[in-house]
Image: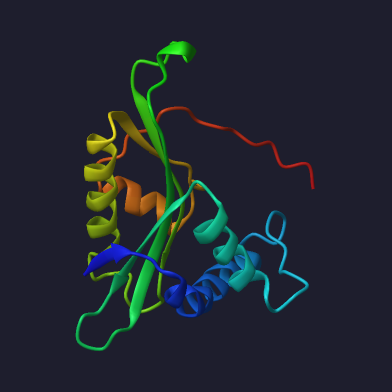
Length: 156
């Protein structure tokens, strides 16, 4: 079941977020840095949920109550004064609990966001990912098309 996150979900989401981020720290130590405080994940999600412009949804197993994943996104609504014809919805963070990544949760959350974007007059949904990441496969499996390619020349 996909639903909007509440303050009661932050602790469970923080556990998944920590696992995800520390995996990224091991995979890309040139880019990701482990936080110095244990409370980083909880605090970051609390700020996003309580004070930010972000929307947060979770995938929850209805029987067990286990949160299998969550997604942070933001819709930029059309603004004629900025000469923007269509709004834009950006996925900022999509995290699936290890072991649940083949259950179609990603597609369910992206479908929820797609519907949200349509309801809010957005012309597209964007998701920036590393080319070699699992998220790149999620994009391929859910109909995302490359918009621009960022290239990198490693110096060390």
